[in-house]
Image (tube, rainbow, N blue to C red; front, side, top):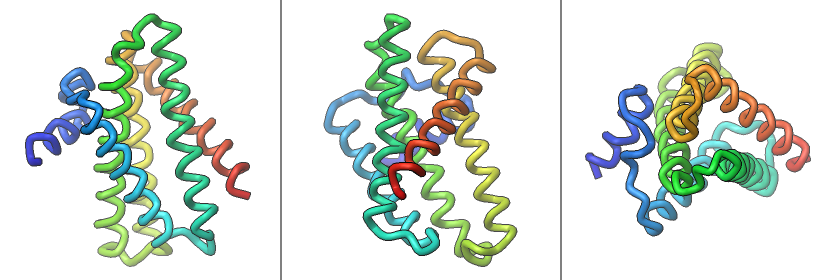
Length: 166
């Protein structure tokens, strides 16, 4: 377990690329399910007056948007063979970021604490940078283009999830 966490942590630190992530279907499924489950749990803990259905819809739409856009982009670039490692890296790193939020928010005074909100924002920006790094490596594009693309995906996912959850 520790070596797997080290792979994702090294990606989060921009030391390694998604090509090192295991791509066995059972591993991919486990990472995706763990990320969805933890994201639902954390969102329910810290979401303001959101029902389980709203949180589940928002989480599902966000993750499906990420998975779908990345699939289309890799397919258009003729790199669809990189999809399993790329999507596993994206969801695995998101899982680590969600764990960080789950651990830090209670320690920093709860979801309404200005310090918690600031730390969550920093983690959010870090997450976009990491996603951009992963996309840069997977798609053979510049790091800047990867970060811009990751930001665009995050914006699209947020817009779609917000409209779907209401």
